Figure 1 (cartoon, one colour):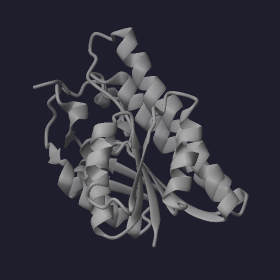
Figure 2 (cartoon, rainbow, N blue to C red):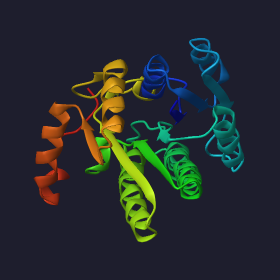
Figure 3 (cartoon, rainbow, N blue to C red):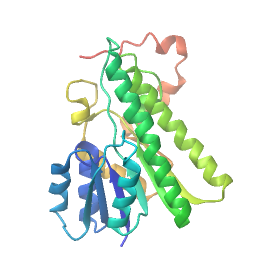
Figure 4 (spheres, one colour):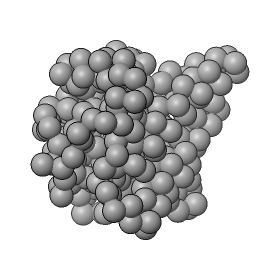
Length: 242
């Protein structure tokens, strides 16, 4: 029986993805800050679902993740869904810094732990939910854009490191477009997708061990042309809340 650990399974994409893996018969370890949603998922299959309350911004998150791996009986795949972000046109400092702590510091803490675990066990699969926002800076969400670019680059660097060290670790960077989740509950973006549909595509991307997967096809096309835009034009794009 394969084992997956999903960090950030309390709502949105992580929650829906966890349900699919549970239905597919995996041994599933789920974590997040809120325990109630985790218990809801555990009730779907009490003998195959294991929970752990983890705040990734805390140094204690490392021991929490290792404890969850032990409860689950091991880890074949680590899926990082935990993250925050919001529009912050006023550049409210606390919002920007909190996003950096979660999407930067917390992300790094958890990914390092997963990488080192797979290094010790000789194989594994690290998957993260980043965003198309890492493609170009979005003026109304500066720290969110920057941290998603950081995550994209970090995954590239870890893949290179794994090759240098001859480690059997594969990496999947999943970059959804805008998804209707609690993360964006107060913000409006074009072409919003539903979390349940996105979750299905995430599972397929991990199963096929895709290195980079933009979700969905509309956003893949958008990102293709977005990358071609010169910097002077990008800063003039009328990206704003509707």
